[in-house]
Image (cartoon, rainbow, N blue to C red; front, top):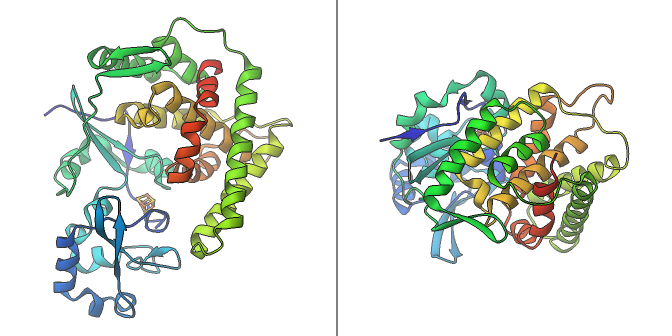
Length: 358
Ligand code: SF4
């Protein structure tokens, strides 16, 4: 089987526990619940014995099991941020999504793609000191799955509104884009401009003022949404309310910074974001908003927001570590269902970011 990974990509878990806090812990396959019950996990791990360690929820696809959270973290997260199920019974006893995270596996017309997700809080650190992705592919593909691997097979792929490519032509275009990105070493905006050049030759000349206006509009809109969530969802679990308040603060810092002199990104941060962009293109996650231009606009918005909100020493460029600390949280925000709906409505602004990146 042909398996593609982003050139030069590395990943190893840094056991920070962030993924055990910020994601929904389900649906869990009934067989996994039954296996853990049969092994006596509630007796072996005290926090799981003090209250039910899973719950049954209604979902659009029917009832499903979810692992319970305690103060915002998976009931099995140990104080040392390792997983109690993994320690007691090995990786194969965990739900498939825990085993797979942060890998993302996708089938496309050329074969299979394996990438690491930018939402992993250890993405940057492990891109420097982790194991090469190539060497982990067989293990990732061997994880038993309750859901089939997604297949990227639209008949047409929209580049910009009114301009689409048949799937096979898109695969050729994707190869050209990735080759161009492998050679690019500029800022995220310059890198997206390289992609735009490889995809669409027509269109208006890039206008930095439109880019800034679109960034401001998106900042303002997301700020209003988070204000609304904070004032209306007063019964949200404490950890979720903390996360929302923290993100509101990130937006506020960016709103203040956009009016002043801002720090550029370091060469290291640019390299890191180039890897993230290549991963998003190869995994097809850049198409999630219904068109590649919107996905690239969202990538630019998140990178710009993280740069503006990074704070720190004003005389120094923003380092890759400073940037990724904010960026990974923003990636998780954009996975939220409400925010996703807002981004779908904000597609004209995302398109402007794509068209006017320079
Ligand atoms: S967020 Fe990433 S680095 Fe941290 S525990 Fe989860 S997989 Fe490991």
